[in-house]
Image (cartoon, rainbow, N blue to C red; front, side):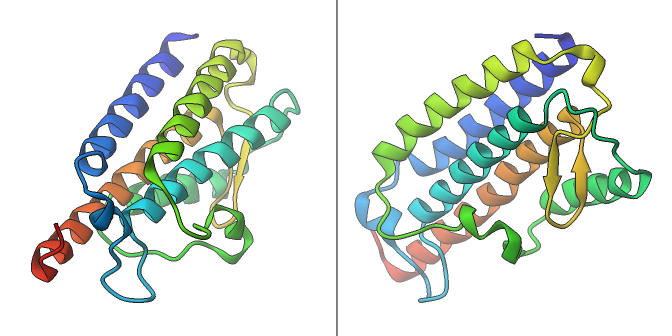
Length: 180
């Protein structure tokens, strides 16, 4: 894996560890708690984060080597989106990305295994990625447009950070509701 991608992967691994350190200690009741019917539970947040990464890695594999141009406007929107995801601003999943929404009752343990497998697939994809394609688009975000692989990795990291903030909010709501 080239050094820049290795650094970005290490950052993503760190973000994942921080996120999981928030989720793993939660009881079953806490992982299923929703502060309101429209809110996601911690288990659903975990499922969304996993599904997002899984879908993005699939797109990277499909688009790798296609030489997709990343327009300057997409580059700017990608940077802005990544910055926005590092804040506590609440955002809705775009309608075009409905497949990454949580679905049904979610159990944490199977998701942890699936995410570990998916992360190995991401590492293999990064290791095989040709440096000559670094500036090509590999992922088309429904809002910001095409992203290069390094920008995609930065987005994934910011996405996990964004949802870590959501887990903190959920934990606060759990404490107020007396959920143990």
